[in-house]
Each structure stands twice: as C-alpha cells, then as structure tokens.
Amino acid sequence: MKIGLALGSGAARGWAHIGVIQALEELGIQIDIVTGSSIGAYVGAAYSSGKLNELSEWVESLTEWQVFALMGVGFYRGGLVSGLKVFKALEDNFAFSDFADLHKPFAAVATDLYSGREVDFLKGSVIEAVRASCAIPGLFPPVCVDNRWLVDGGVVNPVPVNLCRMLGADIVFAINLSADFRPQSLLQNQLEHEKNQQKTSDFFKRSQAQISSWFKKSENKDENDALEAEQDAQGAVNILDQANSGEELNDSAHTNPNPQALPTPSILNAMSGSLDILQARVTRSRLAGDPPDILIEPQLRDFGMMEFYRASELIEEGRNSVMRIADQIKYQLRLA
Image 1 (cartoon, rainbow, N blue to C red):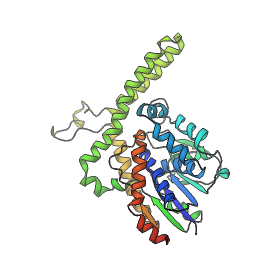
Image 2: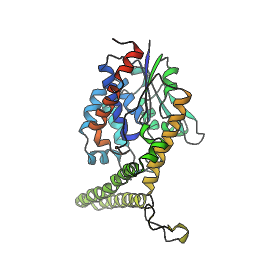
Image 3: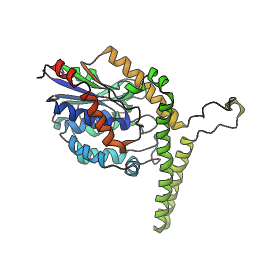
Image 4: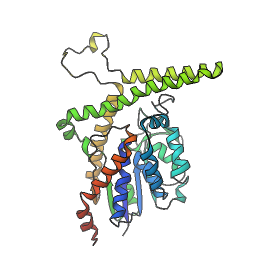
C-alpha cells in the first residue's frame, strides 16, 4: 500500500507542513509519494530530497528582517518581491536539482497564466518547478517555462490530491492550509481576518524603512554605485508606498459616502484577502470532486501570508493538527 501526501498552498502558513510530516512519521507512517502546490511544493521538494530537517532548522532561525532580505522586496518586475534568494537557498541546501535524483516520487503544480490550465511538473528541474508553483500573483513574478508564463499552482489546484493518485498512491493525506479562510469562516471572524490581512501590509511598510536604511549605508560607495542604489531604493519605496496606501482618491466617484465605514483596503490587503478567499473556494471545490482519504487542517487563522519568521509556531500547529486526529489516522490505516 502506497501512501501519498498532498501539501497545500498558503504562503508562510506552509511551514506547518513540516510539523505535519514530522508528526506523521512519529506515528510510524511511511510516506511514499509527495505532491505540492506553491509553498507545499517548496516543502515537498525538500522532503523528497531527504532534507526536511535541514529546512526545519533554517526556517526556525529566520528573523523578520532576514525574511525581508531573502524576499528581495520591490526590486523585480512582475511582482513586489523577486524571491531569488529563497529559491537559491532551496537549490543550494534543501533540494536536489533534478526530479530523477529525488528519494521519493514528487510532483508540483503551477498555473498557465494565459490559458488557465493546470501545469504538472513530474520531471526536469526541481527548482524551476518549485519557482513556478510558488509564483503568487502580484507578489512573485511569473516564471517562463517552455514558452509559457506560469503562476502559483494554488490558483487552480491548491491541494493536489489528483497528482498523488496519478503517481500511484492508494491512500492520500491532504494538508489544507485554507480551512480557516472558508467564506463562512470569514463572515464569523471578520475582525480577525481583517487583522490578519493587515499583517501583510504592515510587513511591507516596515520594509520601506529597511530599504531606506540600506540606501544610507551605500553612501560610501562610488558615485555610480550610489546613484544606482538610490534609484533602486526609491523605486522600491515608491512601489511599497503605493501598494500599502489605503487612502481615498480625490475623485468624487471614489469618495466613501459613509465616514463610519471600514477604511479602504490597500492594494496588498485586497490582494492577500482575495487570494485567501479564492484558494479557500477552489480548495473546497477540488476536495469535493477528488476527496482525500484523510484530511488534515491546521488552524492558521492567526498567521499572515508573509509571516515566514513564525516558523516554530507554524510547525508546532502542524504537529498539533495531526495529533488531534491521531486515533482516526491509526484506525483508517489499521495501525496498532
């Protein structure tokens, strides 16, 4: 009997996958097949390479400013962050370069930006596949593979159960990171979700100050380098300032007639909130059409999409989500 693990999308919340895998292994469950979407592909590539522990140690050491530096905020076309250092770290330390070298069968999913079709990666470059799968629209730039522009796999298949079955899994565990972002949950916990979305905007606001401080450190460089640094820094600050602005436009057509209404969302708030709702709805639809044998849903309402520096808490919640249903898992797999 082959057991498959479908790791769902969810940006920073994906570090919970590490805790889920650790807990499953502690229960004596041997995972044979791994698939992933977005951050699930990142963690899945490391796990299939036999380097999950190394990844866990690294992410638990990250501070907020280290996350900011790794992201490359405001310095890349097509997205607010480049993410180049993030994927370089994966390539250098946590994953093999080719699918053929992996210890376990692995697949990643991305989305064709123009056709809307699901694109599955089963061979070739692991890093290229993960980059495409993680290209969150508006945040990371699209990735061109085989003359197709690809974005986040979570747009069409947030929890790729179907890929596990296609690779031969008899039993599929699905890890859904969007359980707390279903429409009914959003209505019941509106204030909590508004606060959660604001965390993403606040992260980029703090990034503006960091960019400015980095620019000041460049004053000792030669004139050309200093000018280039100034242009990069100012461009990044301008992008972040506009993305975080929630102020009303002067145009009367955009004026809020109700002064007691909620403040206008910033671009980042609108983007992150929309992605949460989109992925929750798509996940619900996909899981209904192709249900897993065992569904694991960590409680992640308190975690923002850019809070990669809260890895220890996320990993712990991943472990807890398994332990809550440990008896069910043992019963279904007929474990002693």
